[in-house]
Image (cartoon, rainbow, N blue to C red; front, side, top):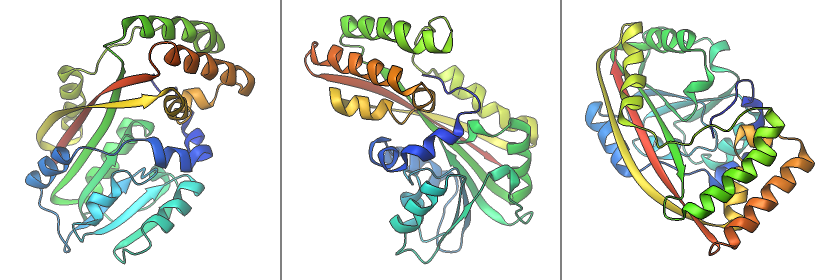
Length: 264
């Protein structure tokens, strides 16, 4: 489901569940990133929107100095505890747009499934000014797609969304489509508008299988689902759980992960 504007606050209300159920990113993505820009103990790095730290640990293992920017107070506390053994880790609690960074200071700024919350012009211009010449901006995200192997289940879930989700938001159903290479390329090319060069992108794929209860927990970490009125949300989730259990008890999610890379 696409995120709705103005719902960024919702994630911090489910920080521990988000950290547990939101997936990390495949090893091949980090290999592609580190092939593009080697990162080591001499590197100065900023992560924008760290959330539950899904993308933070692989970066910290390089030995770099990493400053995480996270607007959620609960997430910030979770991250401080999770990465307390890393002396090279620090966290700033606040909105990326509001924090002042020194220009021409960082080797890498990266953001995992978070940069879409920042106004485009503000975000790209700020990242560009923060980076050293030759420094890199890496943006990546996971795009899940519902079970392709059980069309009857997907149809039933669509009908449940009509009754609860779309009725709550007073919207018509949006057709679900898998994330495409064109979308990844278009997103990558945004950087060119703000002075970045050597722009590249890549796609990675994986499958995840959930029990009905696990899938409901996952839905409970999505901003637009959290914002649904509680009694409606409870009925909505129960109906989906029942639908999955009536179709074998599991649901498979097909993930497409996109990576965009660009240099100052």
